[in-house]
Image (cartoon, rainbow, N blue to C red):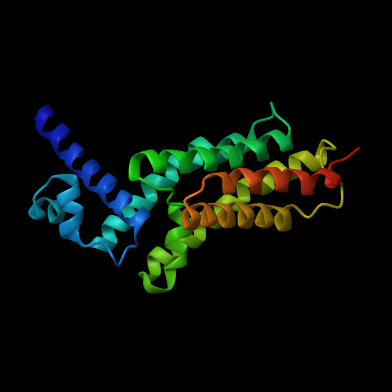
Length: 206
C-alpha cells in the first residue's frame, strides 16, 4: 500500500511539474492536456484520475508554487537579523537566480509564474483570477511588514508610505522578470534590483 501511495503521489507531482514547465514557457490556453501528459510521461487517463479539469490543475500549480515561493522568498523579509536594504537585495537576487534556473531547466528565462498568469488572468476562471489577486496582496503584505519595521528602526524615513512602497517594489520585480522573459536576459533583474536599491537610498534614515 505504501508503494502504491508513493507512486500515486509521484504521478500527481510529475503532472504538476510538467504543466508548470509548459505554462511558464507558453500560456495556460496554449497548453493542452495531451502535451502535459506527454511531458510527464503518463497516460491521459491518469490526468483525470487526479484532476477533473485543466483549471483544477492550474489551481494546484498555483497553490504549490505559492507555498514554496512564500516560504523561501517572502517569509525571510520578516527576519529581524538583516537590514531592509539587505532584504531588498535578497528579493531581487532570488528572482534573478530563478531566471537562471529556468534557463537551465527550460532553455530560456520564463519570468514569474504568478506574473505570467496575471497577464492572461482575464481569460482564466474567476476563482483563479481571485487566487492571483490574493497572492499579490499577500506578497505586498510581506513587504509592508518589512517596510514598517525598517521605518520603526530608522532604516527608512518616518514619512514613508509602506503600502505604496511595497507596491512599487512588487511592480519593479514583476517588470524586471517580464523583461528577463522577453529578452531571455536574467540580468534585467539584477539591473532593476541595483536601481531599486539606489532609488531608495535617499529614503533611508540618516
